[in-house]
Length: 145
Image (cartoon, rainbow, N blue to C red):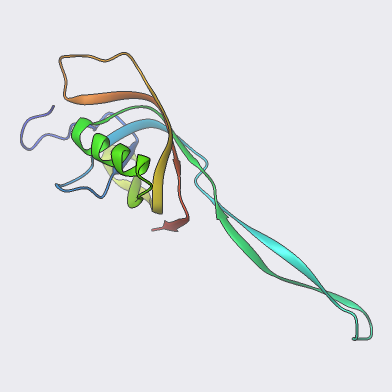
């Protein structure tokens, strides 16, 4: 782990803050796939109107599953979140895209997020971070900042 004042995840473009105790970020990833939402549209036929019109009304909001690839994450924060996810609990997490000179380009808050898939790389006893090949997160809402 990096020493005081250092940024341990500086080589990664996508930083993740798990909303856990202590300052973030708690991890960094090279790739982040498909953060988004999908809103269905229901068709309502207003048959008594002339001419006949089909009105499109708001349906269900759905958020896409987010897949983070090739990264490292703080072992303690990740273990706590994994245990909470297994127990059915969720939390709000933040993913930040860094641009040149490590400036924030875009930030996404994933509300009611939980882990649905995790694939690890081989473990290294020399660090306190967990190397993750792929982490898939389900969420119920996305806020873009």
